[in-house]
Length: 426
Ligand SMILES: *Cc1c(COP(=O)(O)O)cnc(C)c1O
Image (tube, rainbow, N blue to C red; front, side, top):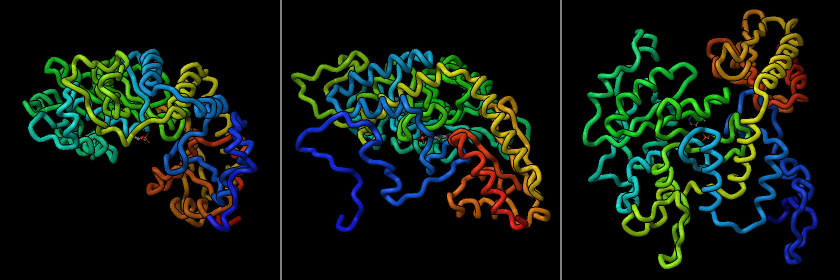
């Protein structure tokens, strides 16, 4: 580290100084590291650091850090709170929704079978197929497959491709289920709950667990309970998106025996058989012996993430959603107003009711009048000082989106100023 700038002030480890106020010693850690702060109006994107955490969440993580606790006991406490928030039988804090999908798949592959736990990701010799409707194939689907499960694409992509009106049908699921089926996977969207009910109605009587990826389906807060209420067996949510928890956190909620099987494959299992005393969520009697470190060991959630996530979840559940929505809409309207005289830029507010999630400000870019197209404007904004990120989801169709979820109020007008500076005419 010769020549590198020190990251801490004077801090005497040997003297055992403790309980520093978070942030005090380190000042602006990013400045010290030489990493620029960015204005994020692209949403709670992982590559931009995820959610901005509220002070009580930051405080909980700091308070959790300086202690020794039993991690299984902490996860059981988390389970109770996740169950209360979701209506599920049990829950687990994971290192993100992606890890939640991998652990969900592992739990469905093994149940309490220790031999199967020991063999993952090798799944030869036992049911290992996860049925995945083609409409639900996403970049995250492979997180299920890293458990060793084999993804079996089923159904048609008519709605996704715009080729037709039909979605997933009962007979398509029925026909795909066989002796090798271990689970059924589903990606939730704001408008496919009917399809989930259909999948549950086919899978449940046949004993096939349904795993729902609801990573980014919050808000609305009601979705914490919706998919479980529809009969899903396991549901995953990101902790570092709308919940506002640590970036590397997530929730796996669902049936008690599956969550228990996921937990035992996630926690440290270098335990002494004579003294190991697992919490009830881990059904020791159902296991023939003690599993070793499980497939999920690489996804271990830290005590700081668990504490932070639980506080964030409580704040998210208690928040006045309508008030937050209205405040976001007011801010977006003020930005729209401040941009309305920009040539070739057409701001349009999309309400939460229209998006099914949070309000957004769409900026239509007319290249003929603005002097550049949406991707070019986005590129310039990202090179601005400070760099500004807008959502590029519709950039190819000439639209950039201001997503306010990770945008601080004092950044709104900095964003507007950056857009004005990046337009060629100004
Ligand atoms: C963000 C996301 C994930 C991954 O979530 P992490 O919490 O970042 O692991 C998985 N699925 C979908 C649909 C997502 O949007």
